[in-house]
Length: 111
Image (tube, rainbow, N blue to C red; front, side):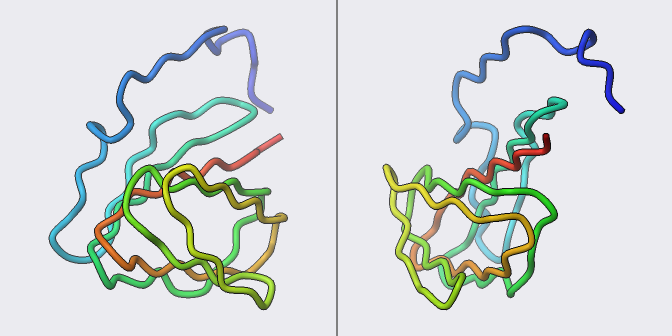
């Protein structure tokens, strides 16, 4: 178990996009925040890249920081653009495809 007393009470990240350049090919990732309750990862996609079907052991929040992504989960396909939000239950299988060069903020609710 993680000791919460070692975590700062406030975390400020001025520009998530500056932390996570989009690759010319494939997929990149940057862990922007790790805390006992939550982890925030920025996934960066070259246009056309597909993150094959997988699942996570925690509930997820997916938000596009830029670009356009198709997310297939629960028998549905949703297009995610900046300003949109998807929530997935823990263990839900999903796949993500970048239509354009994109950054996806993935928030894992770990507690």
